[in-house]
Amino acid sequence: RWCYISFIISILWIGVFSFFMVSWAEVIGNTIGIPPVVMGLTLLAAGTSVPDLLSSVIVARMGEGDMALSSSIGSNIFDIMVGLPVPWIVFTAIPSKPSTVVIGSENVWISILTLLGMLVFIIIVIHCQGWKLTKTLAALMFVFYFAFLAEAIVLELPFEMCKS
Image (tube, rainbow, N blue to C red; front, side, top):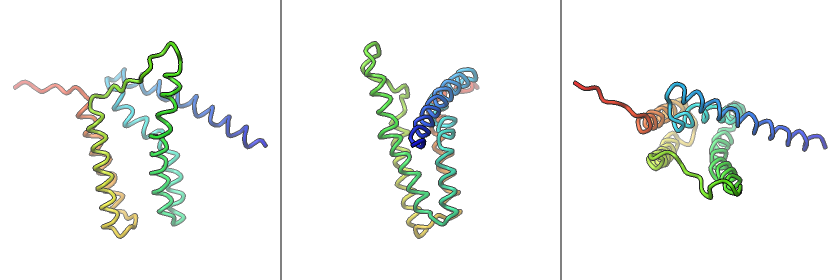
């Protein structure tokens, strides 16, 4: 009986902490001149992925690599298909708010296409590794992640060219 109340209270606390995490990330980004998109791709993404990381490590150590990978993929699909639309529906349902939510990144399509390309490439690499999660595959995934971050930063930050 108490498990239901505990679950609801936990969800409320996650919502409160998420609100503050986003607000603080925005303040930090504005203070040091980092665009919100880059803060979302780095600080917020890392912060919200820690529970996924911990659960994946636990099940991978138990020898359940398929569960670790499936959990990671399933979590991201849930975030995209439920975690984004629900707040958008709530936001647009308020009569005094606009009927649409504007995405502020002009380069979002490049990021999406890069992500899809990396997903295809990772599937090919996993296949070439014999459907086993290896240290080589882990290192390659880190390389892909940092390449994605570098691309996002280059696309979003207003770099000024040095005059010669």
